[in-house]
Length: 165
Image (cartoon, rainbow, N blue to C red; front, side, top):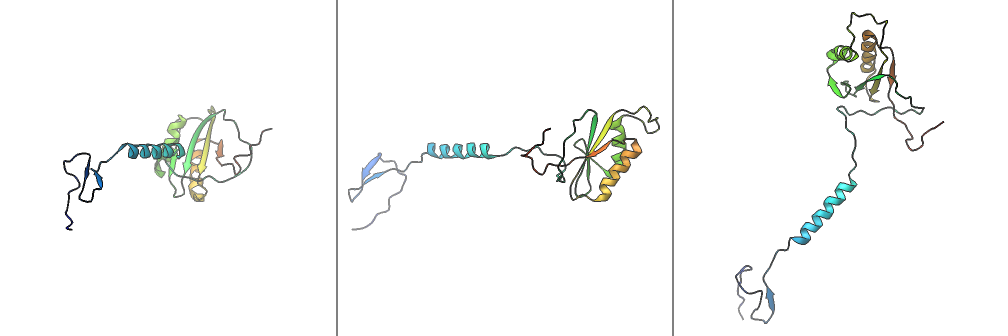
């Protein structure tokens, strides 16, 4: 008995008998189960993905516990990253342009009288590993511009237990 080579894809009927009387079927590729599996994986990934809010600078806020204040004034948010970069209202700013941008957002010229001051608050969101000098530079620039209402943003160490009084 001699074994013969038979090609897999030949134009034959759906089933045929070989020399051993064993039924053979022509191979076929069924894509429907493959597509079903891919759709299930895609749906699983879409549901399990968490959506977070991304900022221009990646910062980690220090933790404190306390009550949050309700904002009743115009807020200017300044983020300080751990490598000393600044972002004012989610716009990255160079160190040398920090005073000019803060002055422009405040809307009062440098030479103007600050006695008629608008209620403006600067919220500093400094990374926990940011240098002291970087934060002090923001404080100094805010003081030079004439903004004295400055607060620091923190994160709640226990976000699940909120304090309500």
